[in-house]
Image (cartoon, rainbow, N blue to C red):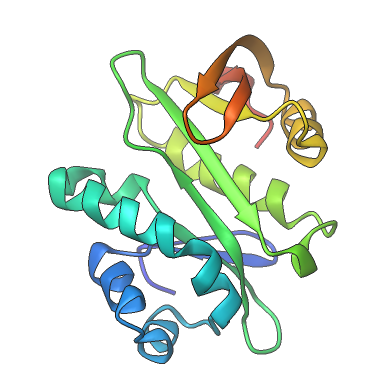
Length: 180
């Protein structure tokens, strides 16, 4: 695997560069799939086109953010399907905080892939000494994510109103307390 790929027991998390994202948005799904060693479904692309466009813009505005941004969650079996995405919303802020975001296609849920991907991403991020706090903002209705962050030891620190997602509960986990 590439140096830009984080691996765990069952998953690979290849970095999707700005070039990959733009190629996907241009319909070059097979080419990008070949490059990252995965099979990308039309549903995954349809569900994530908005995110690809947002992260590509973010990288154009701040090229140093690329390594913190979007990664595919690739299941290392069979045709190596892309099961979802995982990312930080950007690099560490002045507090050393990075906020995680992830989503799995419905057919891949309930298998432990989300927590495995989060643990792998956190282990990678912990190598950067500027990272001191992980954050997750979760809808109070998202039971799966609430269960996941509870298993990791996150503590609720507040709530916020997201213009796109509505009410979110905000949780944090100091790096020294991570369970990776």
